Length: 114
Length: 112
Image (cartoon, rainbow over all chains, first blue to last red; front, side, top):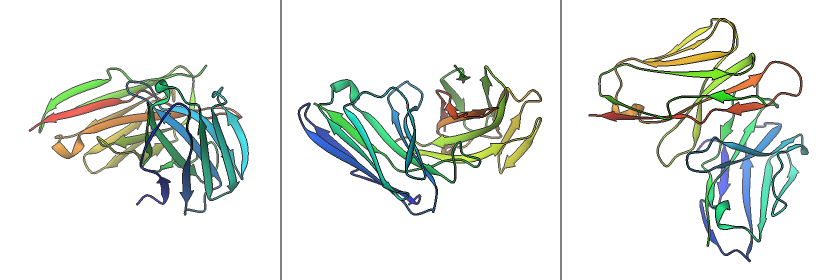
């Protein structure tokens, strides 16, 4: 594994459901990120946390709500999603932000909204 | 805003051929990173370039940072089927409060 663990790996949810994605890093990094990866689009940065403080929120709809209870854990709470939110959601971590030596990505959660 | 461009998005080569792809930024970068994502996988960090004109090698892969620090190249010598995947470049704009911006990536397929 990469040192960044994401659960679940796959998630199918209805538009009225509430679910959460979880990310845990065992690398001692200080920064954690949520990215959205859709087909034929660049990786879209959603949220950045540095030392548990949110430092960036890239105009993400309020139906996505991040939470960072400590430097090792990051959550993405989902509610009333739309079908266009179906994508691969990637968590990443780095020693600092911006990263001076690359991100470590998790394996991602493949989300399907029906 | 800052843009990092990778064109084309897809390239097909015969196994054994060399492959080169480029990454161009609209602004000067403090560093540039390359990642590889295998089909069905997640991006994996390959390398970072910091200095103007820097060249780094990893086995058959050669990475170069342009003299003006606004572009970069990835060259693969004698491609193999294991090289299949999407290669992303990502740049950090020079200056404060900058962030890592990813290109769209180039998806390489290799015909055996």
